[in-house]
Amino acid sequence: MSEPERLLAREVAVSPTFLGADGALAYLEGPTTDRRVVIRDGGMTETIEPPSAPSWIVGSPTRPEVICGIQQPGTECVDFVRVTRTGDATHLSDGSRVNRWWGGFGPDGDRFAYTANHRRSDHFDVYVQERDRGEQAATRVCEGRGWFNVAGWSPGGDRLALVETEANTEKRLHVLDVETGDRRRITGDDAARFSGVSWGPDGSAVYCTTDLDRELTAICRVGLDDGSIETVYESDWNVEAFGLDPETRTAVFVENASGYSKLSIGSLSSATEIEPTHVDVFEPGVIESVTVSPGADAVVARQSSDAVPSRIARYEPAAGECATVTETRVRDGSLSRRRVEFESTDGRSIPAVLTLPRAAEDGAVAVIVDVHGGPDGQHRPRYNPRKQYFLRRGFGYFEPNVRGSSGYGASYRALDDGADRWDAIDDLVAGGEWLERQPRVAGEELVLLGESAGGLAVLLALAVAPERFRAGISIAGITDLVSYLEETSAWRRAQRQREYGSLETDRDLLRELSPVSHVDSIRAPVLLVHGEQDERVPVAQLYAFERAARAAGIDVETLVFQSAGHRIRDPNRRTEVLERCHELARSVTRESDAGSPASGSNAGSR
Image 1: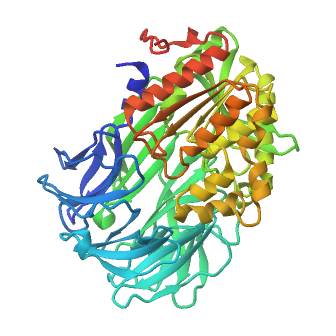
Image 2: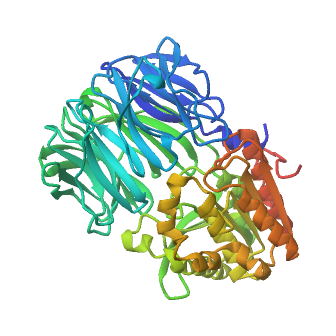
Image 3: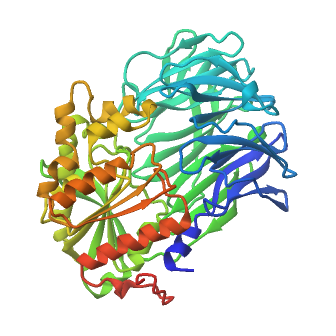
C-alpha cells in the first residue's frame, strides 16, 4: 500500500449513534467506499454489512435498527435504507435522483421525517414515512417554497421544527403540525443563523444556537407562542453544536475556541439557564459530532486531530469516566505547529496556522498554502491526509483563515461578501509575503491549493500576484461565477447569490470576480481537478478555464473523474489526486523528498 493510500485508509470510524431504548452503540467503520456497521453492546461487538457503503447512520429510538444514508454514485442524492441488527436491509427510497435531507425518527420510532425536492428542484417539501413502507407510501405533509430541513420532532410526536435556509447566514425557524400540515414561522426577518434545534421538555419552546443580534453564536430559547428569544448560555466563543434531551433535561454543547473544540455537559435548571460543566477528556482537536444516549447516562463524541484521523469515545457523567471505543493514529509528520497572525494589506490581523515538516531541521522548505472552501469555512486542527502527505514529503503547510472565515464572529465572516472578496484575495497575497520573512521557510517557493470556493480564490490570487506563487491547484473550483450561478443546483443558487452577487443586478461584478476574466495575468502553472458529475460546481467550470488558459499560453493540466461528484470519495482516485498535486508542487520547487517517511516509502515518485 502506498503512502497516500495508508493515510487515506486511516479515516475509519464515523457517525456514532445509539440503538433502541437499551442504548447499544453503533457506528460506521472502514473507508468511504467500503463501510460496515459496527455495534458495541457491553463486551460484545457485531459487524453488519449494508448493501452499499453508507455516508451516515441514525439509530432508532425504540428498535435495534438503523437508517443508512447511502449516496447515489456520482451525485449528492441520498437513499434511505433500513438495516436491522440481524443484517436485514429494506430500501425505503424509490431511487429517484432527488435530494433528500434526513429529519429524524419520531419518538415512537414507527415513522421518520425528511425533506425532498421531488415536486420542484428548488423547493423542498416535508414528508413523513413509515419505517417499514417505501417512499411511494410517504405522506407529503407540507409544501415548502425554498430550502427546508426538518430539525426534529416534538416530544409528543405531533409537531416538527423546521429550518428554512435562504443563505448560510439567513435562516428562519418554523413549526409544522404533522396532522394538519399547518406551518407557522416563529422567527423574524432579521438575518441570522439557527442550528442545533432541540425541543424543550414541555414542547412550548425550542432551544438552538443563533447569532441573531450578536457577533458569536449562543444558546437561546425560542418561545413558540410569541417568538420571544432569550439567551440561555453565551461565552467568548461560538457555540457550534448543541443538543438537549427533553426527558432528562440534559444539555450537551461544543464551543469553537480558536478552532479547538471545547465540550460541556449540563442540566437545564430553568427555562433560560443551563448549568454546564466543561469536560476535558480529549486531547486537543475537533469534536466532529456528539450524541447523548437514552436516559442521558452516556455521551459519545467523535473527534479528530492532526495525528488522529478518528476517535470515538464514551463519557459517563455520573462516574466522570471516559473510555475510548475506537481510535486510529498516524505518525505525525510535523516538526512544529503554531497558531500565528499576520498583517494584511489594510492592516487587519489574519489568523493562520503554520506547520513545518521534520525536514525543516535541515533548512528552509517550500510551503503549500491551503485555501479553505465554503467560502465561509475555517481551517481547524482536524485530521487532513493531504496535509500529512505533504509534511512527510518535506513541504510546510500554511492554513490562513482569511476574512470571510467562520469562527471569528459574524462581522469577520461577512468581510468577503460581494466586491469585498478582493480583500480576502489580498489576505492570501499578504500571507505569502509574511511567509517570506519566516525562518525555515523558502518564501519564494509557495504553492496554492484550494477546493470549491477555495479553488476560485487560488486562481484569483495567481492573477493578482503572478510572481508570488509558483503554482496553483484548484480542486472542484469555481472559475466563472456567472455560469456557475446559472448552472449550479437550483436550490443552491439563491443562497450563493447572497454570497457572491445577483445574476440580475451584479453581472458585471460577477464577471470581475471570475478567474476566467483574469487568465492573461496568470504566469504560474495550474492543475485543475474535477468530478464529471459535480452538481454543486459543474465540470463546465474546469473546461471553460482550461480553454481560456490554453489560449493565453498558460501551462495547465487537468484531471477529470468521470463518475465522481463534488467530493472525490473513492480512495484510489483520491490517491491519484494526491500524487498529481505532489508532482506539480515538486516540479516547481526544490526537491522536497528529503522529508520522505522513515518507512522508506517511495510514493512520491511514480
